[in-house]
Image 1 (cartoon, helix red, strand yellow):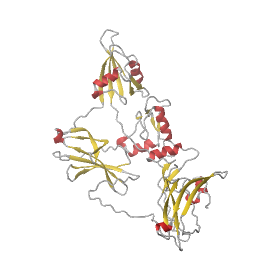
Image 2 (cartoon, helix red, strand yellow; image 1 turned 180 degrees about the vertical axis):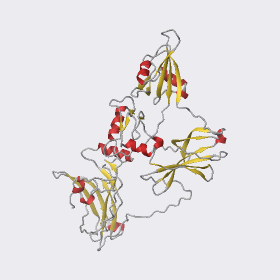
Image 3 (tube, one colour; image 1 turned 135 degrees about the vertical axis):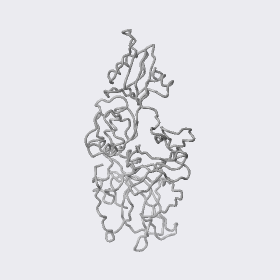
Image 4 (cartoon, helix red, strand yellow; image 1 turned 90 degrees about the horizontal axis):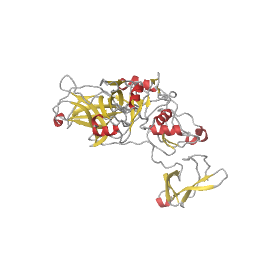
Length: 472
């Protein structure tokens, strides 16, 4: 009977015993409480005679009532002085990839760039600069390329070692669409399947690029019965209203159905409101600017009203947060709607650091946060997500569990791949870590190593000091 391991999930015993080898052996894992009550957790069987060997080094599947539990018992059995060798921790893999397709491996740092070439078998005509660790890259680069052939735009991802994968592709064929210029979006695909992303670009033949869909547009509404317009707006920005909802079957909802090109919908900004003013009988209109004044006019449900609107531009930024200080922006104490208005970008914060590194995609005062880690919701929910945001940690601080379990310590450069049995992307794991209370089960991965004796232990690896360390 082995020693007991207290409050562990995947126990490591590292114990030896001498047993008869001419009979099947049953290994039973027990769980005992503080009062000594014992339950069987799982069992495994080793029959050296049946498998036709004198020794063993491997895994035995664990079962309960003849049903597999999904767990294994790792053990070694020897007859002589040395245990048989098992599957080593290091191995080599060689891949044949004649068509240079994406391998599908993702690394911590990534560099995004795009290349342009002939759509069918052509050489690369242009390659952009690389953008490091961005989600929605902005290149703002120009190149001259032939327009008499279909062009293929390929987005690549490279790691720090220069290894490159193809993320997505888009094709522009001006001859096929019957135009000499272009200003719009190209849908991105991978292996013929849409990715959901787009590549925005302009193509010109002369001196000026063609105009695309403008950001500003005007909407005029006739409302003779002075019904509720159905707009729900956020007025915290002093200069403009932010539309966060349009009520169904309202005046504005019906207008949007009739005029899909210039809809006032959630995510739209209103910068000016003009109403027909018949009170003086002079036929002049009354215009309002400023969010408070515009909202006051809208609440009156005027018979005739015109809006000056601007479309929203949405993009995502990955932030590396410091140990203290959060995202690095100031937001209203009592936010409205389904966004967080940025009233200040704090000095020396995560957002300012992003702005310094990405001048083509800066975050500014009066911008709005509409999602955090891909999750949107009401302003109160976004506030909670912002407060719960964690950092990208690269050092593991000492844990009290290490003192109690010297055979299974957690060390710097180990990796957490699941928390309480839940795996996911790094951002999801960070949220789970933040929510963890008095107890938590971490699933750790590290480079596997063989158990070695003290006499044969290898020299300690040289200490590696990261450029920046933060507390997870």
